[in-house]
Image (cartoon, rainbow, N blue to C red):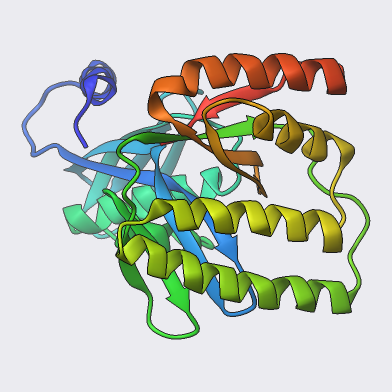
Length: 279
């Protein structure tokens, strides 16, 4: 996905590495986010925010540079085929951001024919990148992963970033009960998306949050964020995710919803939460 930010990164690449001959390659990988996860089912997607990377083949040295921190990782390929890579993460600090960087770099290196030297736990990134990007949602139901439509043209997805999501460890019986319900909810949501009925996904997300609060440890801050979202006009669904609370909002009401959620949550929790549009 070539955007104004990609053009800026390309200019940054040339300013650091020069404009000498060689084909310049580009890759973008969105951060993975999970709608619903049960014992055997996962419904997830690749967000609009993520990692963008440019690369160019060079000699034996592989140089990987973070555009934000100016930290250079130099590795010797030893085969006469190295690379120069510059990457940038749109939103640092989200869960799986480090794995997404590693996956994006490895994917870029594979395109350049210099791959196979980077490894990490990138299964979620690869799953969402392959099946849940570009208007699609990745669905796994105990078998082969598939893509289902994600018709959210009229909606945005935001994350309210709270400081603490959960509490003590849940007992095994409660976890099993919750996961069995999530499998059912993920199946229903996927069927709704196939029929281009996103409201079923919204209903399942809200039902999932109700089950979370009933069966699993949830922090008071996360409860407050969900409550603030549910009281806000334009919010269709709100559910705890790894990075805070994920909400689906009507696109034309997103700005006002962000403002109202921040104010309501701030009064309850005593601090203003960061809210980020991820899709």
